[in-house]
Length: 185
View (cartoon, rainbow, N blue to C red):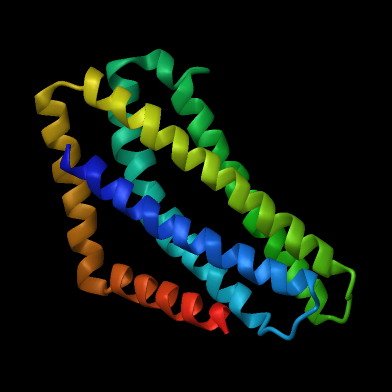
């Protein structure tokens, strides 16, 4: 399935951002001077590239097609687990944002919460991506009929084309490169 190959490629972009997040957290731990505003850029990437763009293709298209084929996948099955992990990731990001706001208000101890939530997010996503790439997507390829696969590919293509016109992919991949370069310094 072409759409699964694209989703896996997107996972590699997400993994690159996870490395950036870890490097920022390490700088926070060492009390190095960093631009804490970059965490808001990271949150923007997570919410708009990873969640709104990438996860929408998984949740609204691929997982939905899998659940229609095998309803038990959505009722306490592996797809339910993936959806729960998506929600957990959103919680970590929300908590990260709150910790950043507290830090900006002068609460130096909130740096612990910045690190805790950011690292929890990276750990969750690394494991989550591995499960999707090595199990969920292979399972999708084996259970979905060719007609359903074609429909999934078409729906994912529609999402990609619609957002390509708005420049979403280009914007966030450029942001990723910018943050990768910045964190190296």
